[in-house]
Length: 349
Ligand SMILES: [Zn+2]
Image 1 (cartoon, rainbow, N blue to C red):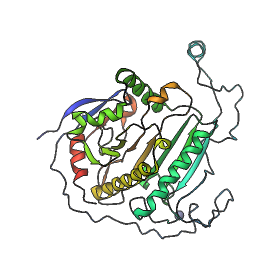
Image 2: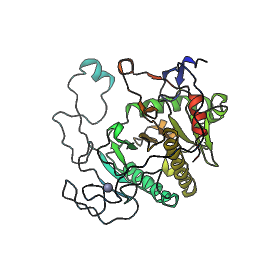
Image 3: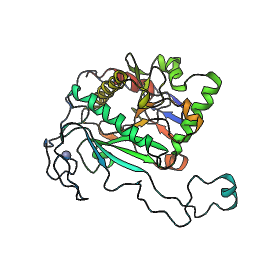
Image 4: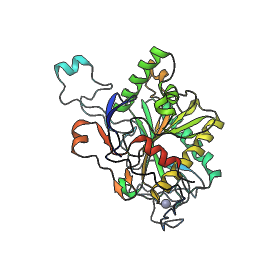
């Protein structure tokens, strides 16, 4: 049986995604796979994220237990970033771009933080004891709030790069927080799409999406009291999933402690599903999509969500961004989202 061959509209990014699954092969077994473990030590004296270690900057990590965060020693954005000669503060306006769009610069002011999930060098979030997840979620919130309050920051992006497959240089499980001095390209597109929808419906695009038959019938992986895990209808990566609140919330600060900690548990279960699906410690890119903090009125229509974008299409096959995708900016997904959801639901965790 052939899988679908069609374009699907991505409602947050306002773009086509090409679903091109040549064959809808049978669902994978739901049996619990033996997850491969790395042989990392609990503590690595050569790891600059481990407790008590001296980093390249000369700073010494405290002998911390649990989560710990520090300023990135090699930041992309920092408050001390130099001011380029003739640099501007805001994005260039239409008049500037029409007359002279060349040679425009601005300072890379902002903030970059490194977020260690635990003192343990060897435990991913999938492996961390469940009772330690609330402290991890408290760190997400604290770091986001500090970024949001920083006047240099217009959008705070929290993310985790996991696995050597996507170029992670340090295997100590950790995430990062980037405080951008501008609203990102994807942030602007998501904001525009959500504001347009809210002005027509007076409700949140992502929350309404949960009720739409295209999602509700076949794409839900897990639903809890406050959260829904789903494969997006126009998934851009083979096993992409989102975690969406059942009631609209703009950012992590909008969540009660109970709801935040439930998110941490849901998040951990989803990382465990990926490990079962791919029968290994699975590489992944994870984003937290909080509303920008640049003061734009349309931020009010933003709904928080998290996205997992695993680079694998099969346990031993990476999905590459190749010629068509890099030329077009549009993505081809080789796995039908409904099949991906079925396989993820079948993972026994
Ligand atoms: Zn370490």
